[in-house]
Image (cartoon, rainbow, N blue to C red; front, top):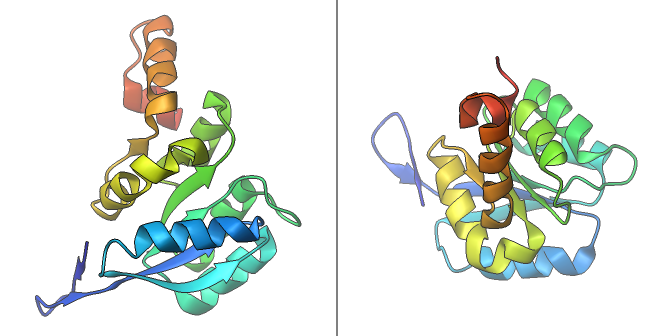
Length: 164
């Protein structure tokens, strides 16, 4: 999982991990170490710190929790889009709400991984997001499809992003 530079050379993917639960940083780091081209360059434990770190580090990828102190992940994502527009955001949260996931995607996150799915889906989500694709945890994906079916033929992308 490398990024290609303008000169055709590849570089490591610089990752900022944002979560207020300290043990989660260790779990994420262990999962990310499976990919030698992923480098954790920073950690933040609240939403305001996430925005500051994103602005300072300009990471390629931000793994962002929703339930953060000082500034929730949804608002942090909005602000991060302004200060680090090239950073891709993958939300990693305990929250199983389809509405919360949809709001996260509407703010500019490309993916949403439920923490309980993290061990088996985090790297897939990272890869998809780095490729500019949407990713939704399997535990939520069925809910998105069902909600889409129930909303009068609206496409899945329209449902997820809220575009009509």
